[in-house]
Image 1 (cartoon, rainbow, N blue to C red):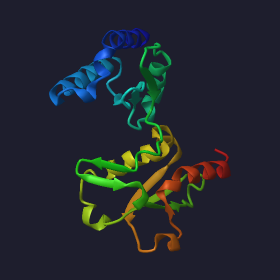
Image 2 (cartoon, helix red, strand yellow):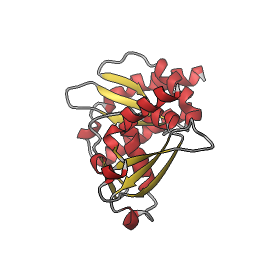
Image 3 (cartoon, rainbow, N blue to C red):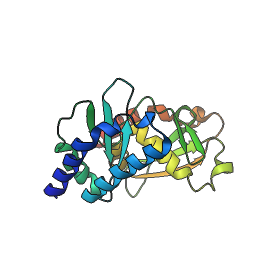
Image 4 (cartoon, helix red, strand yellow):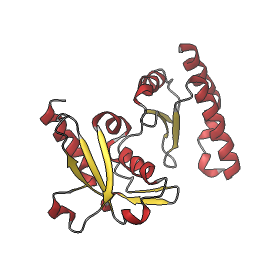
Length: 205
């Protein structure tokens, strides 16, 4: 394991300059660069993936993600903990919550954060679990789309962060957004992070 970590970072140190300008090269060149990076990452652990990018004239970010797979969280942390200091780069474990991810476009599904609401769910058999129902406008017309659930999960990654989404929410379902959701006791998705923090304090988690 340690040798694989060392090999990955050695490769990245030697090749990192090519990834500083991935948004400025042709699509086929960019695809090949990212594929090369994925190949090297998978030599360490083939359950991990990455996101790469950043603003022009700013440090670039390499995010290592387990895509919510809790069993691989330790592998993510070990890799990032061993990251060398490389000029122009920031290395981040897990997808982080962001205020910028207001709209997700995923395989033809467009999800906007402010249009989604959630209802806290309570389980009588598991009272210490945290459950939510995500309500989506027009759900009945798109519920058969195979990518809808993945799009919702991608949005939750941006609201809570990958680690919180995986560890703090015990169950989730998806339903149609009713009219006047606030009157029905629902909460806008923009408030989910604050709700989870409050609920964890209440449960002593």
